[in-house]
Amino acid sequence: MKRLAASAIGAMGIVLWASETVLVTYTTSIPPLQTVSMAFLFAAALSPAVWYLTGSHPLLAFRQPIHVWLLSVSALVGYHACIYYATQKAPPAAAALLQGTTPLMIVLGSCLLPGERLRWWHVVGVAVGLFGVLLLIERGGDASISEGAPFYLTLIGIAAALWGIYSVLTRTQAAVPSSALGWFYAASAAVSFLAHLALESWVAPSVAEWSAMAALGVLPMGLAIYMWDHGMKRGDIQALGAFSYVEPFIGAVLVAIFSSAAIEASLFWSGALIVGGAALASSGLWKPDTKDDNEGKEATMRTPGAPVPKRSILQLLAEADSKGELASINNRLLERLIEIGRDYNDPRKHDAELAELLLALGISVAIWDKAITESDAREIAA
Image (cartoon, rainbow, N blue to C red; front, side, top):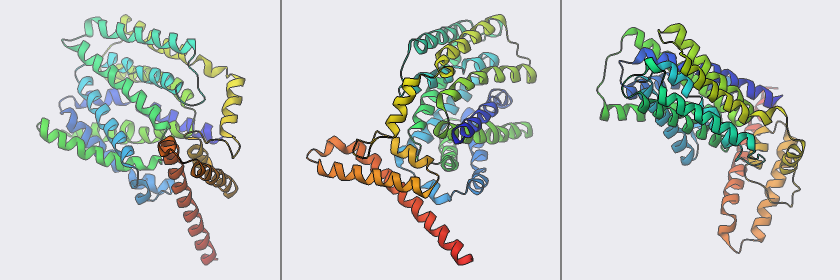
């Protein structure tokens, strides 16, 4: 049920995400980096409410490893700056459909995660989807295409693919709470604004443009990414990848409703290839392989003496909902540390696993400290 709930929250984020393409069309006179910085400022303003609703402590959310900060901020700033720069100059309906490369990369990338396998339908599905992308870039909507549009559409396709890769990498950061995104939003706003001062000139937004940037920050760049991050870390990554195939079509429909853009026949066939390829790539989701499922269960239920696979301890730690489960995980963690200590002739041999185990140990200690503090507080109140 937890996995299903997390997947549902991630799906809600995808629906909110679809509003991004049409909202950007209302900020075309504002420099891209200025738009990104202002939107992230509004997104960061959501942080206190998120921390309150999730019960997260702001300082705990802030204390993340430097590589997590670098990955998150560079992905947030790089993706959105690239998308907004290209979207403002590319045919809007084509841009909405082209972002369908993101789910393709999620499905393909998730196959590289532990417990997943790359099958023929993944390869064929990605090939069909990429053919649709190439067709979309080449034609760009025929009459709706403008000078330089192929370059901007290519840029959107690259950015969408990179966001798909980042989404998969997010899965490996299960120990980082989604509430930490508030700090990443604030840092992204600062980085984007500094880049704006260096590369662009400030343009005073109108009331409508301020409203559009506020909506961008609250919806697709704020709440949607909070939900998406939670779904990627706690839900079914491939199911979310499959559901995200509808996002380009929702975006295209919104564009058709709120602007004069029209979806022509070439755009329809390109979109059909993109989404059809994505659907084929995810066809294995609807008929789970029992053998693979059993192998996955065995991987997460290893005996204490067996090596701990990367991420397994962190995943179990993130999903633990009782003191008994937490104690069992701690026992396995300590046993593995003892085993590594006995076989430490070559330190480099265990560096990667040791880093994971020490990170898990630190998180476990923090959870126990918080539980003890809350228990003491209840006893005093009683």
